[in-house]
Amino acid sequence: YTIAPWEVDDIGRVLDEMISQAGVDWVERSYKGKNGTVEHRIDFGRPIGAKKLNVRLEIGVNVAEMPDISYHSADYASEIVGWGPGEGDAKLRTAPIRTGAKGLRRVRKVSLLRNNSVDSLTNATRQIAQQVSQQMRVRRFLVNQSDWCPIGSLNVGDWVPIVGVTDWQKVAQWVRIMQIEEDGDTGSAVITTE
Image (tube, rainbow, N blue to C red; front, side, top):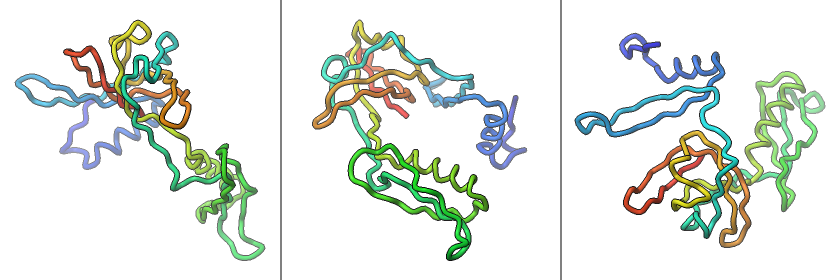
């Protein structure tokens, strides 16, 4: 399927529509092409990558440096309550929806005025609840070549387990590889995750 940029003003929208209709996954790759130019390629798959059960990434063993970790503490909430349209007793409300966060109880109210039924308001509130649980995510790490994790066996889109202890917290989670920057001299790679 070829998309001509002079025929379509928003190629990203066309790709999003094609992907949602087909139910596929995609990964964008950039690499050095012919004559030193940068080339871009979009790979489609169903799904792209695999869950790697035969590799082990452990902080301090083959993950050489402390990984970059991100938190979403500004959005933290232990419960979410959705408020829809209406006023007074007629206002649509959801029951509190737990986010699964552990720690301090903090309730957050979200206004979702476009949802005209309790079911659609509850579904929209559940989607927000999944995003605000203050979950720690490993974003980037340096991995050394080892028997536990041959770098050549990893590919963009793969899900890999990472375990260990950071400065103050234990880590045990699956991360999806979005970028691999290999260093041929040292035999290591910097991996960026989703």
